[in-house]
Length: 280
Image (cartoon, rainbow, N blue to C red; front, top):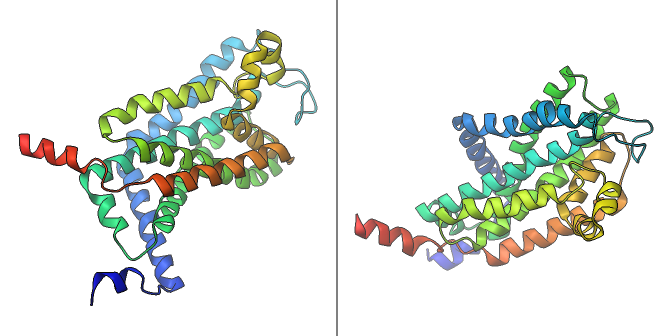
């Protein structure tokens, strides 16, 4: 049988499910074997929550703004931003593994399977989002023990928001990884993306305070997709819906994912890998 008919053979739903299960299982095993990844994902937001927030609690008072109905502690305000921070770092780390797989040739082997590229990349995105949900749940549990948490209904209402924000940030990382040629370049690109997105958002400061300090920065925050991911999570934690943030997150997820599917080249990085092998 030739490769072309096999490539476009009709695939059943069960075969798609087996492929999705395999990719999710592989990502889960990789996460379990990289314990330092789990620890580092929690250390960063916990440092911000217990050290940074404690130092700024008396300086940065938070007035009554939606979705809050009373004055809140600064720790409570930054908690949604730290949840999104976990997902942002996880999305970039998951994309880093894609760059590694592409350089080693593993991703190229996967993408020549009969399954369409959009399904394979979407499965990878779903797997990364599930891993980020696990990290977020552990962080919420730790915050709950410190009496920093939403109403009980918020733990259920926030799940759809976390899934959508995880998909958006994972798709962003996937789009970035499609443009990175070598593994060595990805760390610099991560820092160039992660820190501007995090600091130029509503994760640490209410936007009305940003507007008072710098109108230009305020508009940058408004156009930052990470801001809307944070606000979507913030409102969902209190059983409310931010319609504008929902629309932005869904729209950006579609744009990032379509861009990644169109731009992803499994052969990129192979010449460099072969060149290094020849030098050895």
